[in-house]
Image (cartoon, rainbow, N blue to C red; front, side, top):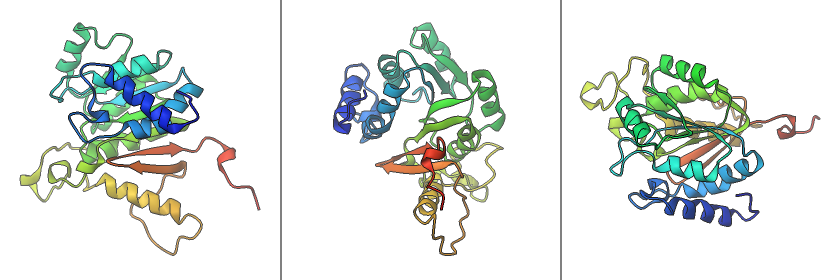
Length: 252
C-alpha cells in the first residue's frame, strides 16, 4: 500500500476491489467511476503510515442494484487494523446486512446525514476524531453540506475527507429549492438553502489558488482555515486538512 509509485498503489486498490463479488462501482463496472485513482493516490499511503487509523464511510450501498456492503469488504481487506465505521440511512438494510455477517468487525451508525441531530448522535456514539471520512451517501447537496459542516471539525489534523459523486450536484433532483417544490427529490427541515456542493468546492479551490493575492474577490463560501488542499478528479474530490506548522510557510 505504501509503494512509492502511485500507479502501483492505484492498481493495487483496483485489483483488490476486482477480487470481490459484487464489485463496487467505485472502480467502474456498473458505472464510469474511477475512484481508485484518488484512493490509490491518497488513502493507501495514509493507511500504510497509520494502519490503526479511524475510518468513516457514509453510505453502505443499500440503494445499489448489487446490494450493500461492496466497499466494506475492500476496507476490511486493505485495512485490517483500522477502526472501521459505516453510516447508513436505511436501518432495515443495515439489520439485514448484520444478519448476513456483512458488517462483522464494523461499527455502524444509522440515520439521515442531512439531519444535524443525527450527525451529532453519530459523533457522540463514535467519539468523532476520524482520520479518514468518505461521503458516498445520499449525494444530495444538503446531505453533503450538512455532513461536512458537522464532520470536518471531527477530522483529525492531517486527515482526508473524500466526497464521491459530485457530478450529480447540478441535477435538479439533488438540489434543495424551497421555491420549486415540484423539483424536490429530497428535503429535510435542516436544508435551509440552495447549496450546490460542486460550486462550494470550486470557490474553496479559488481561495486556495489566490490565497496570497485575493484580488478583492468576495466569496459566498469561505474556505475553512484549516483546509490544506482540494484535489479533484473525475466526479469526486478529496479535501486535505492541515496537520501542523510544517504545512505553514516560513515566517518572514
